[in-house]
Image (cartoon, rainbow over all chains, first blue to last red; front, top):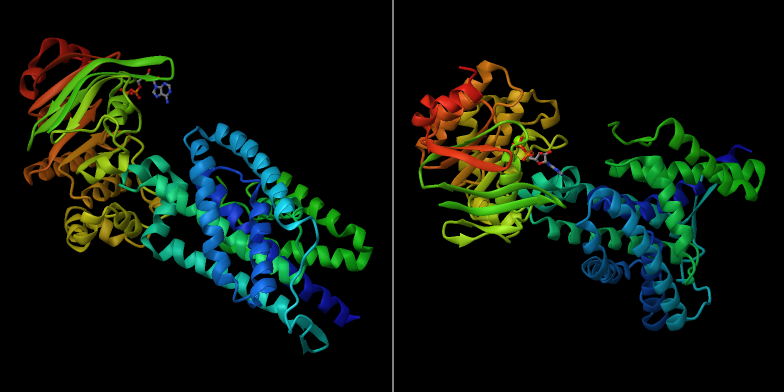
Length: 292
Length: 234
Ligand SMILES: Nc1ncnc2c1ncn2[C@@H]1O[C@H](COP(=O)(O)OP(=O)(O)O)[C@@H](O)[C@H]1O
Ligand SMILES: [Mg+2]
């Protein structure tokens, strides 16, 4: 009994870390550029396909493929911002959100159809030799792949924190998030800051895509469901706390896992949404966000 | 070094500046005074590239900056301490100052600039690891000026440095402004505190409802009857 609950909690943590990672880039971009990129899930999909094809064609280990995924999806993000979103960022904040939503929805359709054309609508996954390997810890099973995913999620958060808190450009990103006019007056090229942030957000989506491909499976249609998950986590976490995003992801993962255990699989998503609504109405700044 | 020549500026369809011209020479202190809503801040926004004038030209050190991006204007040595103070409340005092030295040229002189800022404002050295959001109004103004000095500007523009500060602190701030100006940095100060501004300014402009209505030396304007009755209640 205790072991089953422990197993559910552990599984929830591992899935939840992936939710957190999926939300990290969305939160970063929203916090700095004040735009909502609903095609974030499609960037996750593209990261996933990069890993899938590298494994399928060249036998490249999915975790090693991160070294390719990261720069590739960064460039994709860079181009998308340069070509599409940079126009939106010049608008006032209300119009930024609206217009970014329109662009994002359009982009979702384009990327989805492109993926269908290029790679068919088949569901894909990668199965390296260690796909089913697992560690046992006090009766709790820890699949190696999920464990690695957990570690990578934590590394991504730590890396992002380090970048934002220690590097000049990281501080420029934080400054721009707080007040772009003052940032510009400080000599920061905010266009570059925006590009960099969007690229980073995309890379983080790419990493999440790799983990989705090894932990679950991908198809051209997975984007929307991951965007929604990420959105829920972003709202749960609130803006301004990178660690909070991961924590909120894990909280959602554990809640889903436990409610599926107690009430059955059909309640998995529902309970997550209920928590989302409660937090939204009781604590709109999110669980870890600073109040205004 | 700064020439604003005949600019018109509008927010959307709403024009707020007409034919505004202003000049700041090297090593000088110039003031721009006028009532609330006259267009002082708007003029400064246009200078810094945060707003583009519909008409007219702005040059700095002989270069046309009318369409130049803000950060490049800053890199040229033209720096604004905005009305809204311009400090990053979620960053520490030290991080704010470090960011001030963001442009490459300033970065190389970061340590020496920082020392200089701490000499001028010892309180900032004491508070360096505190978040800027926790500072008092006066300290935040000092941080904003300190941050601007990190850029080693050639021309420092201050938008209402006395706004919302206690008289004693205003005195301190103006002392610092004078001191900075003796070090060869030109100053353009915008104020509703007309008396103090005219006292330190060699030359001054009076702006009312979007137009320059008077300009003369600070000393002359201080004794000018119109200015005295309109702004000093005398
Ligand atoms: N963002 C804005 N949008 C529209 N009108 C503005 C904006 N900012 C200022 N104004 C208007 O422009 C005029 C000049 O304002 P401003 O330059 O801030 O004056 P000052 O700095 O001299 O007090 C005022 O009438 C003000 O209402
Ligand atoms: Mg003003």
